[in-house]
Image (cartoon, rainbow, N blue to C red; front, top):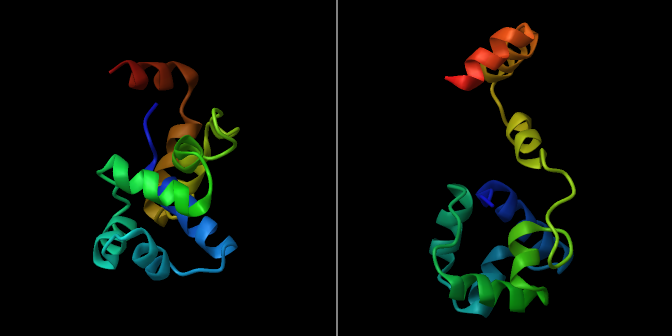
Length: 116
């Protein structure tokens, strides 16, 4: 399963907010330079090292798979379209218009476009 980095970082930010700590405080506690964390969150880069994921999960007191995928451990987010919805929340007007045009296509053209 592909990991959506944007949703991952939104989850981390939410967990930090629930714990009433800043990402800077969290990074200091887990021994990760804040500059690394800030770059990862601002560019929606997935953490490159398993050790970073483990430290973050331990910090929040949750299993790694729950940190990565959301929901309860061993489950995937109940909304399989969450990444699309998140992308649409930040889409430009031009991108939204393009999606509208695609949605208005006749089914035969949608099928042809997805096959290519």
